[in-house]
Length: 199
Length: 90
Ligand SMILES: [Zn+2]
View 1: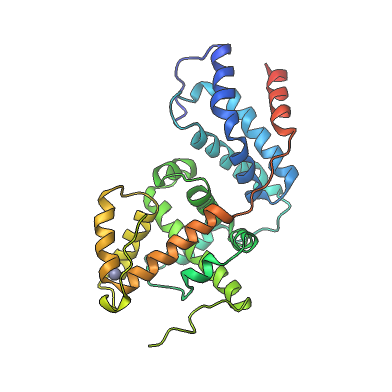
View 2: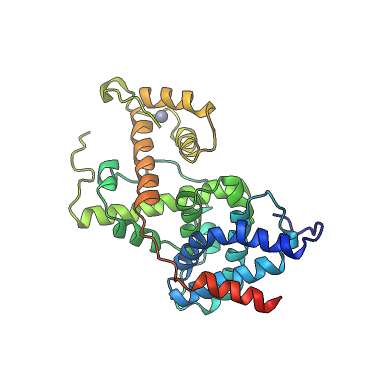
């Protein structure tokens, strides 16, 4: 994951790494890019860009380490540096602001929602996707990395260049925001939320 | 994960330390504690109703995200165009 240049790979080794370790992740990469940009062309450009950079800097990839995490980190950085500015998506609140806002207190682990597990299980893929897409990009990102792509906290910390503690708290906040979205959805659909609960 | 479902009547209705418990449960669900989390988890779920409910909701959220989120089909020509760009850059 570090940018330290190791020994140089031969042309054959480069091709082998590229085809064997990088290309198999194109599905995940494209879906990540699409969930960041919400635009097919932007997503394609972002993935192409990422693979070009990956090839150009292949000597800084250490064989046997996690290629997917390495690629995701490049994609995330490209997105921040280039696409976020020109993205067709209307600007959303930046996570820095959001996090500063929430950081006024420690992470609140109180039960913030009366959403029920059963109503979540009944939801459709589109409802889940829409709720996820409605989150600010940095909250959306941690959920994609953790739940859709299965990265560990440590891998996420490297991909996002943030401490593990921040990964944990951002993920917690992201899921709470997602629950709020799902709860609204559940209520509008007349799903069972908390009306059966009695004190 | 196999969870022993007990009748809710046998559980405490108040959690002793919600912050600590919920953070622990979420780490366990995220696979961060390995096997050491399993014993703690069994105990919490058997004894504490808020923990029990929080665990199941958090688990449901993770499950639906993992299994139901609509996947975007990758454009068929994308892989080829990447290979071609690499070829041309060599
Ligand atoms: Zn508890």
